[in-house]
Length: 157
Image 1: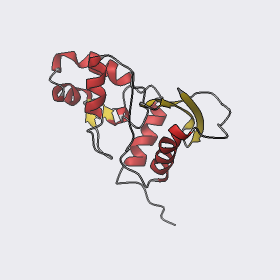
Image 2: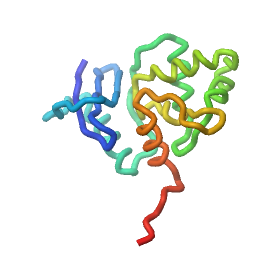
Image 3: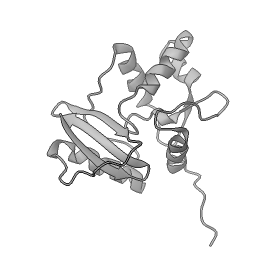
């Protein structure tokens, strides 16, 4: 597995992957040394994340290889169908998966998503519209949703 650390608007970000795909993208809560030379296998991921943060990318085109149970994999696949700039509730996600009674398990799988931003778990919110649960922290979740919102606040001056 190749690894690199980049800086993003939300903090230091660790990317892990190999020839089988990107296995992990996580935001770190500590200061890390930024990778001087990005491994070739991770270059596309770094470029696409930079484009996302610049606001020029709304969809990722990467080979993904997250490690998880079959149930987690099914949740993560469903998360990838949530359009950029849209949100759904945990209940809606559970219904889409045909697992309405497994809402806690769906929420747990959502929280174990190893591919921050690329598999958009930040787009899942509470049924009442609240920002509930996010491994990267609720401030980051709010930032990501505002970043993707078509209704961004414009400067008046």
